[in-house]
View 1: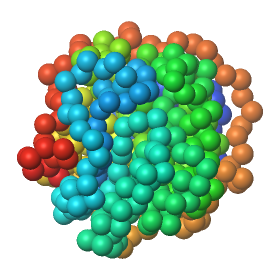
View 2: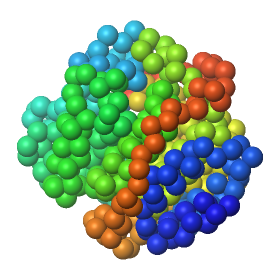
View 3: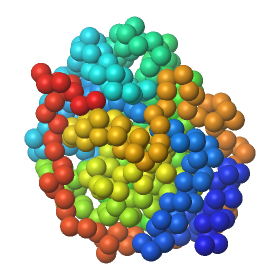
Length: 384
Protein backbone atom coordinates (compact mmCIF):
# COMPACT_ATOMS: atom_id res chain seq x y z
CA UNK A 1 0.00 0.00 0.00
CA UNK A 2 1.56 3.27 -1.15
CA UNK A 3 0.16 5.16 1.86
CA UNK A 4 1.88 2.88 4.34
CA UNK A 5 5.19 2.89 2.46
CA UNK A 6 5.13 6.68 2.52
CA UNK A 7 4.30 6.80 6.22
CA UNK A 8 7.09 4.38 7.10
CA UNK A 9 9.62 6.41 5.14
CA UNK A 10 8.49 9.61 6.84
CA UNK A 11 8.53 7.95 10.26
CA UNK A 12 12.08 6.73 9.81
CA UNK A 13 13.07 10.29 8.90
CA UNK A 14 11.03 11.81 11.77
CA UNK A 15 9.03 13.73 9.19
CA UNK A 16 5.47 14.76 9.98
CA UNK A 17 2.88 13.17 7.70
CA UNK A 18 0.20 15.29 6.10
CA UNK A 19 -3.23 15.56 7.69
CA UNK A 20 -4.71 13.60 4.78
CA UNK A 21 -2.26 10.76 5.41
CA UNK A 22 -3.05 10.68 9.11
CA UNK A 23 -6.78 10.69 8.40
CA UNK A 24 -6.32 7.93 5.85
CA UNK A 25 -4.83 5.64 8.51
CA UNK A 26 -8.04 5.96 10.52
CA UNK A 27 -10.19 5.01 7.52
CA UNK A 28 -8.24 1.94 6.41
CA UNK A 29 -10.30 -1.24 6.33
CA UNK A 30 -10.15 -4.13 8.76
CA UNK A 31 -8.80 -6.22 5.89
CA UNK A 32 -5.71 -3.99 5.87
CA UNK A 33 -5.29 -3.84 9.66
CA UNK A 34 -2.30 -6.17 9.92
CA UNK A 35 -0.51 -4.22 7.20
CA UNK A 36 -1.14 -0.99 9.12
CA UNK A 37 0.19 -2.51 12.35
CA UNK A 38 3.24 -3.95 10.57
CA UNK A 39 4.05 -0.60 8.96
CA UNK A 40 3.76 1.38 12.19
CA UNK A 41 5.71 -1.39 13.89
CA UNK A 42 8.70 -0.69 11.65
CA UNK A 43 8.73 2.90 12.88
CA UNK A 44 8.34 1.81 16.52
CA UNK A 45 11.24 -0.65 16.26
CA UNK A 46 13.47 1.91 14.54
CA UNK A 47 13.37 4.21 17.57
CA UNK A 48 12.60 1.86 20.47
CA UNK A 49 13.53 -1.67 19.42
CA UNK A 50 11.43 -4.26 21.23
CA UNK A 51 11.56 -2.53 24.61
CA UNK A 52 8.38 -1.87 26.63
CA UNK A 53 8.51 0.69 29.44
CA UNK A 54 6.28 -0.06 32.43
CA UNK A 55 4.58 2.74 34.38
CA UNK A 56 2.60 2.50 37.62
CA UNK A 57 -0.16 4.80 38.85
CA UNK A 58 -0.61 5.87 42.47
CA UNK A 59 -3.84 7.79 43.08
CA UNK A 60 -2.84 10.15 45.89
CA UNK A 61 -6.32 11.62 46.37
CA UNK A 62 -9.43 10.05 44.89
CA UNK A 63 -12.76 11.62 44.01
CA UNK A 64 -14.38 14.89 45.11
CA UNK A 65 -13.00 16.92 42.20
CA UNK A 66 -14.56 20.35 41.51
CA UNK A 67 -13.99 20.09 37.75
CA UNK A 68 -16.71 18.79 35.40
CA UNK A 69 -14.69 16.67 32.92
CA UNK A 70 -17.36 14.44 31.38
CA UNK A 71 -15.11 11.41 31.00
CA UNK A 72 -13.98 11.30 34.64
CA UNK A 73 -15.49 9.24 37.45
CA UNK A 74 -13.99 11.68 39.98
CA UNK A 75 -15.76 14.71 38.46
CA UNK A 76 -18.10 17.16 40.12
CA UNK A 77 -21.48 15.48 40.48
CA UNK A 78 -20.21 12.00 39.62
CA UNK A 79 -22.52 9.20 40.71
CA UNK A 80 -19.89 6.53 40.09
CA UNK A 81 -19.32 4.25 43.06
CA UNK A 82 -15.57 4.84 43.21
CA UNK A 83 -13.17 4.97 46.14
CA UNK A 84 -13.06 8.42 47.74
CA UNK A 85 -10.26 9.47 50.08
CA UNK A 86 -8.11 12.46 50.86
CA UNK A 87 -4.33 12.72 50.51
CA UNK A 88 -2.27 9.60 51.15
CA UNK A 89 0.59 10.16 53.56
CA UNK A 90 4.08 10.00 52.02
CA UNK A 91 4.82 6.59 53.54
CA UNK A 92 1.50 5.20 52.26
CA UNK A 93 2.15 6.50 48.75
CA UNK A 94 5.73 5.23 48.85
CA UNK A 95 4.53 1.77 49.85
CA UNK A 96 2.05 1.74 46.97
CA UNK A 97 4.76 2.91 44.56
CA UNK A 98 7.14 0.20 45.78
CA UNK A 99 4.64 -2.48 44.73
CA UNK A 100 4.69 -1.13 41.18
CA UNK A 101 8.48 -0.92 41.09
CA UNK A 102 8.71 -4.49 42.37
CA UNK A 103 6.42 -5.52 39.52
CA UNK A 104 8.82 -4.02 36.98
CA UNK A 105 7.67 -0.40 36.70
CA UNK A 106 10.35 2.08 35.72
CA UNK A 107 8.18 5.15 36.29
CA UNK A 108 5.71 5.95 39.09
CA UNK A 109 2.95 8.41 38.25
CA UNK A 110 1.58 10.34 41.24
CA UNK A 111 -1.94 11.58 40.49
CA UNK A 112 -4.32 13.71 42.52
CA UNK A 113 -7.83 14.79 41.63
CA UNK A 114 -8.62 18.50 41.64
CA UNK A 115 -8.31 21.62 39.53
CA UNK A 116 -4.70 22.11 40.52
CA UNK A 117 -2.45 21.94 43.57
CA UNK A 118 -2.19 24.54 46.31
CA UNK A 119 1.29 25.38 47.53
CA UNK A 120 0.58 23.14 50.52
CA UNK A 121 -0.31 20.31 48.11
CA UNK A 122 3.00 20.81 46.32
CA UNK A 123 4.72 20.46 49.70
CA UNK A 124 2.84 17.20 50.32
CA UNK A 125 3.76 15.78 46.94
CA UNK A 126 7.37 16.92 47.34
CA UNK A 127 7.62 14.90 50.56
CA UNK A 128 6.07 11.92 48.79
CA UNK A 129 8.59 12.19 45.95
CA UNK A 130 11.38 12.26 48.52
CA UNK A 131 10.02 9.15 50.25
CA UNK A 132 9.79 7.25 46.96
CA UNK A 133 13.26 8.28 45.82
CA UNK A 134 14.69 7.30 49.19
CA UNK A 135 13.42 3.76 48.67
CA UNK A 136 14.09 3.54 44.93
CA UNK A 137 16.67 6.09 43.83
CA UNK A 138 16.52 5.10 40.15
CA UNK A 139 12.76 5.21 39.69
CA UNK A 140 11.32 8.00 37.55
CA UNK A 141 8.58 10.03 39.23
CA UNK A 142 5.92 11.82 37.20
CA UNK A 143 3.43 14.13 38.91
CA UNK A 144 -0.09 14.73 37.61
CA UNK A 145 -1.79 17.30 39.82
CA UNK A 146 -3.85 19.40 37.43
CA UNK A 147 -3.26 22.99 36.38
CA UNK A 148 -0.01 24.48 37.66
CA UNK A 149 0.51 28.00 38.95
CA UNK A 150 3.70 30.00 38.49
CA UNK A 151 6.65 28.44 40.29
CA UNK A 152 5.00 25.13 41.13
CA UNK A 153 6.67 23.17 38.35
CA UNK A 154 10.04 24.47 39.52
CA UNK A 155 9.30 23.33 43.07
CA UNK A 156 8.34 19.85 41.89
CA UNK A 157 11.53 19.66 39.84
CA UNK A 158 13.59 20.71 42.87
CA UNK A 159 11.85 18.00 44.94
CA UNK A 160 13.05 15.33 42.51
CA UNK A 161 10.17 14.99 40.06
CA UNK A 162 11.33 13.85 36.63
CA UNK A 163 8.19 14.52 34.62
CA UNK A 164 4.77 16.16 34.68
CA UNK A 165 1.62 14.83 33.04
CA UNK A 166 -1.24 16.97 31.79
CA UNK A 167 -3.23 15.64 28.85
CA UNK A 168 -4.85 17.72 26.11
CA UNK A 169 -7.46 14.93 25.85
CA UNK A 170 -9.31 16.10 22.73
CA UNK A 171 -9.23 18.72 20.00
CA UNK A 172 -9.38 22.40 20.83
CA UNK A 173 -12.58 22.84 18.80
CA UNK A 174 -14.49 20.22 20.83
CA UNK A 175 -12.88 20.75 24.22
CA UNK A 176 -15.78 22.84 25.51
CA UNK A 177 -18.15 19.93 24.88
CA UNK A 178 -16.17 17.78 27.30
CA UNK A 179 -15.18 20.26 30.03
CA UNK A 180 -16.44 23.73 30.96
CA UNK A 181 -14.61 24.50 34.20
CA UNK A 182 -11.27 25.12 32.50
CA UNK A 183 -10.06 25.59 28.94
CA UNK A 184 -7.90 23.82 26.40
CA UNK A 185 -5.53 26.80 26.59
CA UNK A 186 -5.18 26.22 30.35
CA UNK A 187 -3.95 22.71 29.64
CA UNK A 188 -1.46 23.83 27.02
CA UNK A 189 -0.11 26.45 29.42
CA UNK A 190 0.47 23.85 32.14
CA UNK A 191 2.43 21.60 29.78
CA UNK A 192 4.58 24.58 28.86
CA UNK A 193 5.08 25.41 32.55
CA UNK A 194 6.42 21.88 33.04
CA UNK A 195 8.74 22.12 30.05
CA UNK A 196 9.98 25.51 31.16
CA UNK A 197 10.94 24.08 34.54
CA UNK A 198 12.99 21.32 32.94
CA UNK A 199 10.48 18.55 33.62
CA UNK A 200 9.90 15.93 30.96
CA UNK A 201 6.45 16.72 29.56
CA UNK A 202 3.86 13.96 29.30
CA UNK A 203 0.66 14.85 27.45
CA UNK A 204 -1.80 12.73 25.53
CA UNK A 205 -5.40 12.12 24.61
CA UNK A 206 -8.58 10.18 25.28
CA UNK A 207 -10.19 8.44 22.30
CA UNK A 208 -13.73 7.15 22.20
CA UNK A 209 -15.62 10.20 23.50
CA UNK A 210 -17.66 10.60 20.33
CA UNK A 211 -15.04 12.66 18.52
CA UNK A 212 -14.56 12.70 14.74
CA UNK A 213 -11.52 11.44 12.87
CA UNK A 214 -10.59 15.09 12.28
CA UNK A 215 -10.70 15.73 16.05
CA UNK A 216 -8.31 12.85 16.68
CA UNK A 217 -5.88 14.12 14.07
CA UNK A 218 -6.20 17.66 15.43
CA UNK A 219 -5.25 16.70 18.97
CA UNK A 220 -2.37 14.45 17.87
CA UNK A 221 -0.98 17.18 15.60
CA UNK A 222 -1.34 19.65 18.49
CA UNK A 223 0.61 17.26 20.70
CA UNK A 224 3.31 16.92 18.05
CA UNK A 225 3.61 20.73 17.96
CA UNK A 226 3.75 20.88 21.78
CA UNK A 227 6.46 18.20 21.64
CA UNK A 228 6.07 16.22 24.87
CA UNK A 229 8.46 13.36 25.50
CA UNK A 230 5.59 10.99 26.27
CA UNK A 231 2.14 10.71 24.67
CA UNK A 232 -0.30 8.50 26.61
CA UNK A 233 -3.23 7.25 24.56
CA UNK A 234 -6.28 6.54 26.70
CA UNK A 235 -9.43 4.84 25.48
CA UNK A 236 -12.52 6.06 27.29
CA UNK A 237 -13.62 3.79 30.12
CA UNK A 238 -17.38 4.47 30.19
CA UNK A 239 -17.95 4.29 33.95
CA UNK A 240 -21.57 4.20 35.08
CA UNK A 241 -22.51 7.44 36.80
CA UNK A 242 -20.57 9.67 34.36
CA UNK A 243 -22.03 11.64 31.41
CA UNK A 244 -20.14 9.49 28.89
CA UNK A 245 -21.22 6.13 30.34
CA UNK A 246 -23.08 5.36 27.11
CA UNK A 247 -20.17 6.06 24.76
CA UNK A 248 -19.27 2.59 23.54
CA UNK A 249 -18.02 3.41 20.05
CA UNK A 250 -14.62 1.75 19.83
CA UNK A 251 -13.69 -1.63 18.41
CA UNK A 252 -10.32 -3.32 18.90
CA UNK A 253 -9.58 -2.64 15.24
CA UNK A 254 -10.31 1.08 15.52
CA UNK A 255 -8.24 1.33 18.69
CA UNK A 256 -5.28 -0.17 16.83
CA UNK A 257 -5.71 2.24 13.92
CA UNK A 258 -5.70 5.17 16.38
CA UNK A 259 -2.48 3.92 17.96
CA UNK A 260 -0.89 3.47 14.53
CA UNK A 261 -1.85 7.04 13.55
CA UNK A 262 -0.29 8.38 16.75
CA UNK A 263 2.92 6.45 16.07
CA UNK A 264 3.18 7.79 12.52
CA UNK A 265 2.65 11.38 13.72
CA UNK A 266 4.93 10.97 16.77
CA UNK A 267 7.50 8.44 15.53
CA UNK A 268 10.29 8.96 18.09
CA UNK A 269 8.18 9.81 21.14
CA UNK A 270 7.26 7.46 23.97
CA UNK A 271 3.74 6.41 22.99
CA UNK A 272 2.05 4.89 26.02
CA UNK A 273 -0.93 2.58 25.94
CA UNK A 274 -2.93 3.85 28.89
CA UNK A 275 -6.42 3.54 30.38
CA UNK A 276 -9.05 1.42 28.66
CA UNK A 277 -6.80 -1.03 26.82
CA UNK A 278 -8.34 -4.06 28.52
CA UNK A 279 -11.86 -2.80 27.85
CA UNK A 280 -11.47 -1.92 24.17
CA UNK A 281 -8.49 -3.89 22.81
CA UNK A 282 -9.28 -6.98 24.83
CA UNK A 283 -7.56 -10.06 23.32
CA UNK A 284 -5.86 -7.87 20.69
CA UNK A 285 -3.69 -6.08 23.27
CA UNK A 286 -0.50 -7.89 22.15
CA UNK A 287 -0.82 -6.35 18.68
CA UNK A 288 -0.72 -2.91 20.28
CA UNK A 289 2.81 -3.62 21.55
CA UNK A 290 3.95 -3.33 17.92
CA UNK A 291 2.72 0.29 18.00
CA UNK A 292 3.43 1.57 21.51
CA UNK A 293 6.61 1.31 23.55
CA UNK A 294 5.11 1.97 26.97
CA UNK A 295 2.13 0.74 29.02
CA UNK A 296 0.65 1.11 32.48
CA UNK A 297 1.11 -1.87 34.75
CA UNK A 298 -1.80 -3.00 36.90
CA UNK A 299 -4.70 -0.78 37.92
CA UNK A 300 -5.71 2.73 36.92
CA UNK A 301 -7.01 5.62 39.03
CA UNK A 302 -10.51 4.38 39.82
CA UNK A 303 -10.85 1.21 37.73
CA UNK A 304 -8.99 -2.08 37.70
CA UNK A 305 -6.62 -3.24 34.99
CA UNK A 306 -5.63 -6.78 34.20
CA UNK A 307 -3.32 -8.55 36.62
CA UNK A 308 0.28 -7.36 36.60
CA UNK A 309 1.57 -10.84 35.91
CA UNK A 310 -0.70 -11.07 32.87
CA UNK A 311 0.86 -7.85 31.56
CA UNK A 312 4.36 -9.28 31.96
CA UNK A 313 3.36 -12.58 30.35
CA UNK A 314 1.78 -10.71 27.43
CA UNK A 315 4.97 -8.73 26.82
CA UNK A 316 7.15 -11.83 26.91
CA UNK A 317 4.80 -13.96 24.79
CA UNK A 318 4.63 -11.24 22.12
CA UNK A 319 8.42 -11.24 21.83
CA UNK A 320 9.09 -7.95 23.61
CA UNK A 321 11.14 -7.19 26.72
CA UNK A 322 10.60 -4.96 29.73
CA UNK A 323 12.78 -1.87 29.61
CA UNK A 324 15.30 -1.85 32.44
CA UNK A 325 16.00 1.01 34.83
CA UNK A 326 19.43 1.55 33.31
CA UNK A 327 18.09 2.06 29.79
CA UNK A 328 17.27 5.51 28.41
CA UNK A 329 13.77 5.45 26.98
CA UNK A 330 14.01 8.18 24.34
CA UNK A 331 16.29 8.07 21.31
CA UNK A 332 19.57 9.90 21.80
CA UNK A 333 18.75 12.60 19.26
CA UNK A 334 15.80 13.86 21.31
CA UNK A 335 17.88 14.57 24.39
CA UNK A 336 14.72 15.71 26.18
CA UNK A 337 14.30 18.60 23.78
CA UNK A 338 12.35 16.93 21.03
CA UNK A 339 12.49 17.40 17.30
CA UNK A 340 9.86 20.07 16.73
CA UNK A 341 12.21 22.38 14.84
CA UNK A 342 13.48 19.59 12.60
CA UNK A 343 10.07 18.17 11.84
CA UNK A 344 8.02 20.97 10.37
CA UNK A 345 4.33 20.26 9.73
CA UNK A 346 3.22 19.62 6.18
CA UNK A 347 0.70 22.05 4.72
CA UNK A 348 -2.54 20.26 4.19
CA UNK A 349 -6.27 20.88 4.25
CA UNK A 350 -8.23 19.41 7.14
CA UNK A 351 -11.11 17.00 6.95
CA UNK A 352 -14.27 17.58 8.94
CA UNK A 353 -15.80 14.25 8.17
CA UNK A 354 -17.37 12.59 11.17
CA UNK A 355 -15.75 9.41 12.41
CA UNK A 356 -17.33 6.14 11.42
CA UNK A 357 -16.69 4.79 14.92
CA UNK A 358 -20.37 4.58 15.71
CA UNK A 359 -21.04 2.44 12.67
CA UNK A 360 -18.31 -0.04 13.54
CA UNK A 361 -18.93 -0.09 17.29
CA UNK A 362 -19.07 -3.33 19.18
CA UNK A 363 -21.73 -3.98 21.77
CA UNK A 364 -21.08 -2.35 25.14
CA UNK A 365 -18.78 -4.49 27.31
CA UNK A 366 -19.85 -3.17 30.69
CA UNK A 367 -18.73 -6.47 32.20
CA UNK A 368 -15.12 -5.40 31.61
CA UNK A 369 -15.37 -2.21 33.70
CA UNK A 370 -14.50 -2.93 37.33
CA UNK A 371 -14.26 -0.18 39.92
CA UNK A 372 -10.96 -0.33 41.80
CA UNK A 373 -11.31 -1.70 45.37
CA UNK A 374 -7.68 -2.54 46.10
CA UNK A 375 -4.36 -0.74 46.42
CA UNK A 376 -4.02 2.92 47.36
CA UNK A 377 -6.70 4.08 49.78
CA UNK A 378 -7.65 0.54 50.85
CA UNK A 379 -6.32 -2.20 53.13
CA UNK A 380 -5.93 -4.64 50.23
CA UNK A 381 -2.71 -5.35 48.34
CA UNK A 382 -2.29 -3.44 45.07
CA UNK A 383 -2.27 -4.99 41.63
CA UNK A 384 1.27 -4.88 40.29
